[in-house]
Length: 192
Image (cartoon, rainbow, N blue to C red):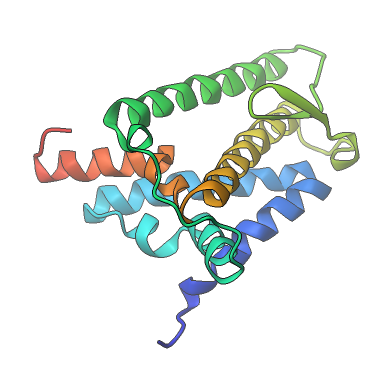
């Protein structure tokens, strides 16, 4: 099977994580992973981003498939359930809005820029080497720290489910996948 340009988008996912490690402001590039799937599902009514263009899903398929870092077991039924997927989506939104709240506080004049990346919404990893001030307002960096935390946490969760189950098990409960599925169902006039 001939490889196409989008078969290499896993490199972009890996590059994103590496660049954010060295300069936190690169975390802003992750917004592409939020807006492009929503735009494609809204415009086309399909999950083409998830099925074809998601670099993170490709990365998990590569690591779990080609490099055999996956047990290749079926994901448990409860992780496939609507309750879990929608519950995780709600939890994800809460964490995302807390990140936006912290960003707003810095833009509103809070002097304490939290230069940490929070892994799994609990563990604070000092990330002081990745930001040394810029011409931008400190709120720009605060958003970057928060957004990188979201992206790193979801990548770690994906790697764990990849290792325990099938390579792309993260895709079953990925918040972006759940949102694009809801958009597709709404466009098709189906009940979510």
